[in-house]
Length: 110
Image 1 (cartoon, helix red, strand yellow):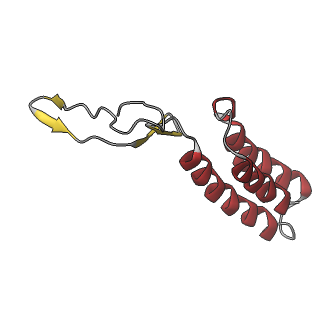
Image 2: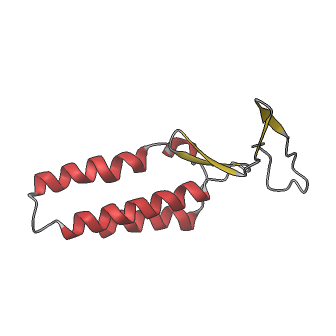
């Protein structure tokens, strides 16, 4: 992977080999739980996070009649808030529509 800005018309795609085996070039990878793109755009990370948080939100909503409020609160903090906060400092400018989507998912569980 090589990093470049979105305006680059011809990004450099280096040929990398390891133990006489050529490694495939990729434009996106997951590193320490964060989806990183070659343009340092966080859209794919936020999309992945939104999918994960939607599932957790549904889980919380469907277990309201079964679990105590204390347990639901614990599930929220461990399964929803922890992934949401992880890596949030590097998002910087993710775009209004993506941040609104995450906010709506968070409010759905209430």
